[in-house]
Length: 357
Image (spheres, rainbow, N blue to C red):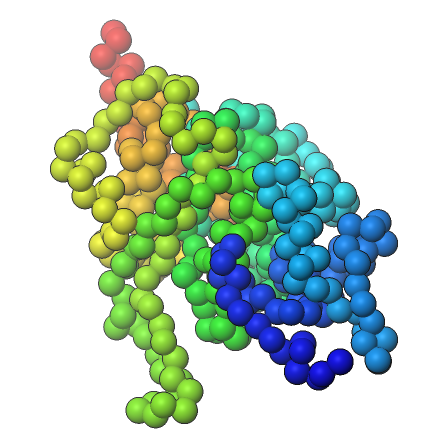
């Protein structure tokens, strides 16, 4: 067999992942977004087959990997059901903070059952980007294989929690180059579809931060330049039905907002981490637009990676119910204080009481 047979590659039309004629075990794991040990289990169970090189190393064919996906109903790989999870439910937590129709839970999203399945109308979140941000309670420098495996697990849980006509606004990077180039958006979107999510569209968020750029690769040289787009994306997904039929059916968008927001390029500034006190806050404008465009007044919104609380502030300002889950207690307290100071949650409740007297 020619040595260069293993180097043949092309672009995977499913989602931008690199496709090879033959994959190593690690490459096959990256293809599915799981660990190498899961690939070994799948082979042992007869779900995948491999050939051996002269050196005794496993190789998995592109045809076999794609055939496995096709055989899985609605692109839901059997590995989701077969793979034993290392995340067990450890607590039925009481809310860290609750006021009116806003809840904050200080728990690990994967280890709690504080949210009932099928109760969420819209998920708006920005998960960790795995670019070595210094969070208090999260390792943001996993190997990429582990990061994709973690992503698969929380995307699967989100899928269980949302209604059949629920939507998902997922704010993630287009790509990354820190620690090696990775097609983050393409890889995560592919995993989401494998889990069961259906793809609707992608919004490009131009946060106008090109002045922060520091990486250029080979300066003024064609030898190894970096091409970096100063944008992030918001991937719009849904569970089973795109048309929303549940809820109040009451929208609160103006004509101007609808016309502007249905344009797939959004232009507004990011948030200052110094002002907010969080390493990666997103501006309230982002969840506010997503909430008003993709949910009805009174719907229930979830942010499984609450961070500084921007999503819940937007829920208060748009008359939606909001649930935020955050593993770090300091960030829960930050979100609570922002709800009090920026969303004026106690003042709003006082105003409602006065009106009823």
